[in-house]
Image: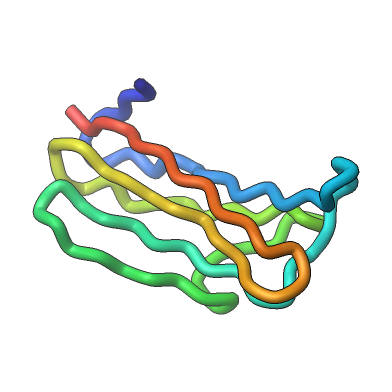
Length: 89
């Protein structure tokens, strides 16, 4: 599991590909982030950055100690989902 110091700004990535492995932009992309206190924030297109086709990222303010979870997901064309966790010490 990835670990970050309290107050750091980890960059988390969402990568979306077609069934044949080519990067593609989904119809709509979302990011759910849950803090160690259980606070869920959902980000839409204004809350993250598109780096290039099919590649999105968010720099988080890791300001609470504990386990953080996040889930990138998309709807419509390119529908997919992926989740991960990291720990802040």
